[in-house]
Image (tube, rainbow, N blue to C red; front, top):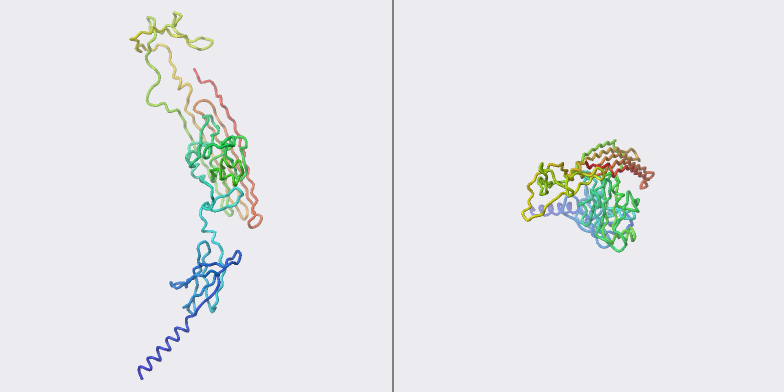
Length: 399
C-alpha cells in the first residue's frame, strides 16, 4: 500500500512539472526589409537553455516555464531584445541594426559616413586636440610627422609661407598638390598648400587625409594626389554656452652652437700701431659711399700664422642677420546650441616674426551655424574670413 501511494505521488508530481513547461516557436526577421535572419541566438533569460534560428529564421525552444519567462534575442550588429513570453506559444520578432556598434567612422568623398575598415583606401585622421599644442602657427606645418606617408616640406622661413605637401610622392599629372576641402568645399585651387597656411589651428575639429591613387575613385583624377579634408568646430544642440580662450607665445632663434665663429686674431700686415695695412699703403677702412672695405696687405710665407689681434671694429654677421623672433597667437571660441540650432564663433589674431626679416599680422574670423529643419535635414552655413598683412622687408639691420 505504501509503495502504491509513493508511486502515485511521484506520477502526480511529474505531471505537474510537465504541465508547467512548454515549447515556444517563432520567427526572427529584419526590420529594414522583413527578410529572415538565420543564426540569431534565442536564450531563456537567467538560464543556459537556448537555441539559434535556422536558415528561414525559425526557432523552437522547449522547457520554457508557463509563467514569468523572458526570451533574449541577440546577434552581432543587431540590437539585443528581451521579450516577455506571457501566455503565448508563438513569439515572432523583428530586429534592427545596432548603429552603436560601428567602429571608427570616416566621411567619404560623396558625403556618406561609413566604417573605416570597409574602405579600400588609406585614410588617416588627426584630431584637432593633437594640433593645438604645436609650437607652429600654421596648419600645414602642424601636420608634420602626424601622417604616415606624408611629406611636409618647408620651402621658405618667411612668416605665412606655405609648405609643400606630398602624399605618397609624385605622379604623372604634372604636380603633386593634393585637394584641400574645408567643410566639404574645395579651397586653394591655385596653390593648395597656401590655403592651409592661412587657417587657424584652434578652430580645427579634425583633419582626414586620403592617401594613394585609389582616392581618385571618390574625387576624380585630381584626387590621385591625395585629399586633405578639414572639419572646423561647430556647436552642439542643447549645449550650454561654452567660451574658450587660448594664447601662445612662441620664441624662435637660430642655433649658433657652442663655438664662436668669429676669428680673434689675424695674419695681415700691420703698421707700427697694429692697424691692418691696405694694398694701397694706408690702413684699411670702409669706403664712405659703398661701405665696402679695402683689401688688406698680406705677405704669404710658409710660416704665416694668425697671431695679431684686431684693432679695427669687427662685426658678427650672424647677429646682424638673425634675431630672436617672438610670435603671439590668441584665439577665442564661443559655441553652444538650443533646440534645433547650434552655433560656433571663432576669432584669432596671429602676430608672427621671422628670425631674419619679415612680420605677419593675420586675423581669422570663423562662423559655423546649423539649423535642423526636419528630422535628418540640417542646413549649415560655414564662413571663414582671413585677413593677412605681411611685411617681408622690415628694414636693413646691418650696421
